[in-house]
Length: 375
Image (tube, rainbow, N blue to C red; front, side, top):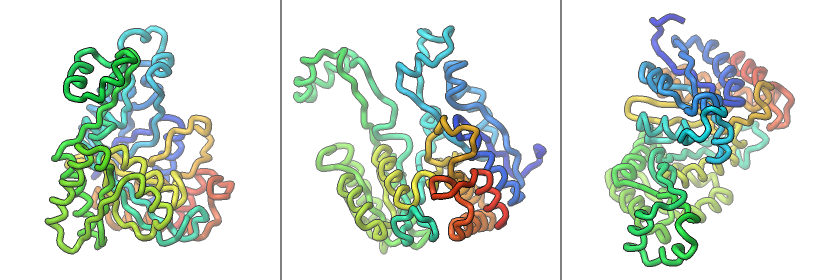
């Protein structure tokens, strides 16, 4: 490819099986003859270990020169384990591990995480063949906003104790034994994600949007989400707003998934809902996602890096291929996007080429080749 290609796409394999599934995506994208230059970027655990930064500044600079990014998988570990994984000369130098995908979402304001969970007929892992759920997850706020403390600073403890009498029961343990994660939500963030969900419903002829939170317990943050959703819903006559608690919604997802249309939630609840919904239609091997902002987007399967399978081309590449389909759709390549989804659906329906998780014995590349063959 030359610099004259129509699109410049950042190519971010990441860790573990990230390279395996990205190789599968490239095979299919090449078969589609997408006019794109794929620009490799450094991201992941290996760069944390060797540089103390899993998302080097050079990668951020690279992304700013591309139209969007396709991302494979990431490995993350807790603080102490991350410190021990550093090269010896980097330990004790103040490096703090922070998820690079979370940083990408915040750096580029990728506020909307879109996760379709659709049952493709012929998949033996489907709970039902009529499931077609779309999850909208707020991507930059909530409990994943990254504002955490351990141990709890004295000034933070004093402020909390002055405003919340219930903090007294924790003070007796000593602030050195208290960890705190903040659930931060803004009216603007809530309005933006709910509006995205309603816009999608209007565009695609969906009948309802269900906002999911826990306002009876999380009164301020959950209450803000529900109140804002009601305000937004008033601008969309003909589309029903439903309100549910996260625990009850998980139960109903298992009980009556065919009755659910669009779900919208803050960061952590959206994460939980989308993984549960994914399992209803075959598991994380079929779970694609898009991180969308006003001017940039990152597309990724939602499975992990599965280091034990790295380089074996064993895992299901369908989540990656469907993420590539979402990328094509975002780029305005509607015909290619529809052709790719149709090819994926056809391979699943035939059931002749499958990876181990679906009861088959084919490699990731063989599945990708079967999809490419349908194109």
